[in-house]
Length: 90
Image 1 (tube, rainbow, N blue to C red):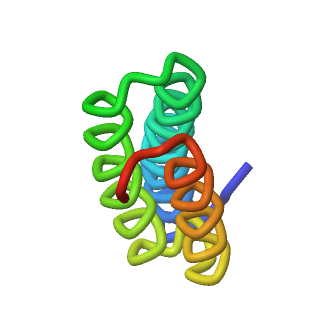
Image 2: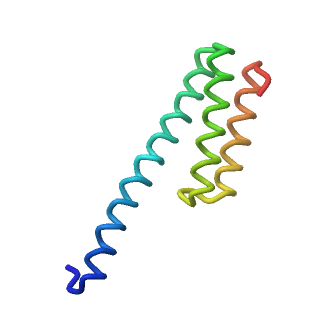
């Protein structure tokens, strides 16, 4: 447990940040799952909309250092490949 005032404040701040990062990461993962499900269903409109949203979420997470920017780029590339293979222009 923190003893000083500044350490107590830092603990409060890091807890808030951890929860915010966790929510963002969870939301991002859900969006990625939605893209993969749309690909399985074969619905091109849903697939395209989900892909665009996923790219947005990945970029946002990368800009906030929740995930590494190269990891975001790699994930976008893999999703794009998946969507294109399903017959939809990404």
